[in-house]
Image (spheres, rainbow, N blue to C red):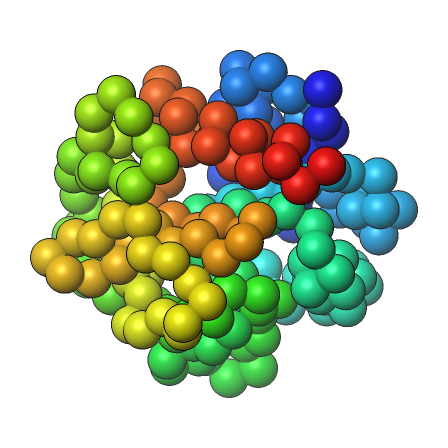
Length: 194
Ligand code: GLN
C-alpha cells in the first residue's frame, strides 16, 4: 500500500490520518524533511494557512515541500491546505507564502466568518455514488483557474474542488465526515502516479 503523509505542522492532522487509514493506506505524519522524503503522497490539512506557512519556514520545510510538490509528488489540500497548494492568494496576509503547484488564485475566508460555516451536498466530478457532504469552515473559494487546472465542483458558481494532474484541492473538509470518497480519490491518484 502507498505511504501517505499528513503535513503535521498545524490543523486537523488526526482526522486526515484516520480517514487515510480507513481508505486503506499507511498514513504517517510529516514534520521533518526526512519524513517528507519517505512518503508517496501528502495531505495538507485544514487549519490556518498563515500559521502553516510560517511554521513551514520555521521547521525548514517550505523549500523541501516546494521541491517535492513541484517535482511531481501527489498532494491533496483541504481548506487551508487548498490555499497552500494555490499558486496565488488573492489577498495574502503579509509574509504569507504558499507551496503552490495548482494554477489557481484562491480567495481566503470567501464564504464569510466562522459563524457562517455551513455544510452542503457537493457533486464532485470523478466521485460516484451521489454528492459528498462538504463541511465549510471559514473556507476559501477559487477565484480563477488556469488552463491546466480542472474544476471538479462548485458552490454558487465558485469552484470548491480543483484538480491539476496529481494535485487535488477542496475548500471543504471531507475528513470531518464518515465519507472517505475524497480520500479514496486521492489514494487512487497516488497509485496511478506510482
Ligand atoms: N480560513 C483559513 C485560512 O485562511 C482556512 C480555514 C480552514 O482550514 N478551515 O487558512
